[in-house]
Image (tube, rainbow, N blue to C red; front, side):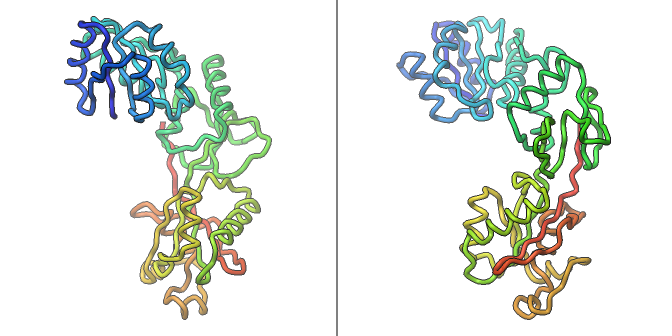
Length: 331
């Protein structure tokens, strides 16, 4: 975590140096600039945290035009120059401000000031729990709504077909998605009032003819996912045979989707059992199949292979199959 530290007074500057000695990847901003310009400049530098040793009001006014998204904004802490109080002011959860405030307060012998409701009441922070389990959030407004409901009601219901090691104390599993406040699934639930959390556990195996354009991959995968009621945001990665590692359209499509792509040798693909085989593919590549075994391998986690959930489907120039990582949700 890259941490910038600002102090205004002589005492504040001394405390800034002390804090900098505690955090390994930190620095004291000594530029001769007004504090508002310092804050703006640090925002542009994409630091992870800003520690301000000054009045809270100054910091609030300086941040007013900078805040945009809790997923990307750095966390901001505010301290008095004696280090008596460490206030987690901004991005306390996803930005790590609450944890940082506690660490700093322990170091200084001060008091961390945390105001987020889940921390104060002892309830699960849904955004942090989702992040811990690699679950994508479909709707940030629903996340806020369900978080408030959890605080007010004390518990939420959850539906999933995935394996559960354990659940937080204030989440209760139900067997019917219609009764759920939260649904963990790669399946699309249009119109459902629940917060949908995607495990991002799907691996898409792709075979293709040489010279296939990126648009052809996009059309095939989109159609398959729509027909299967699967969420495109649940794609974890793509996979194919190493003979296609220079296939421009394939690489462009994976890049556009923002997902990695893995390539396997014919020997690796041929070691996967219970997949479809094709004499034509075998003659052309030396592998009995591409899309299905590639998907299974890409969804695997040693020593387990992924689970094939959609067998290969062919378009004019593209073949697509989907496998699922065996995901385990923990408390």
